[in-house]
Length: 72
Ligand SMILES: [Zn+2]
Image (cartoon, rainbow, N blue to C red; front, side):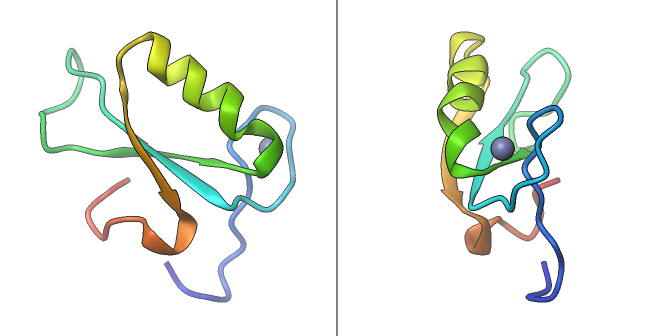
């Protein structure tokens, strides 16, 4: 992810810059190694973590600069 790239929060209707990246995996759709990424601003991080966490999909949250190369 390039430094000039604008990274916007994934929450519906939110246009804030994302600071956090939630790495997640849905075992019924994705192979175990696969990591999907949701981006979150400070205001939405907790909400999105809870959404994924309740479903058992959340792996971990990292700063947007630290999104793994193979995630997406
Ligand atoms: Zn947001």
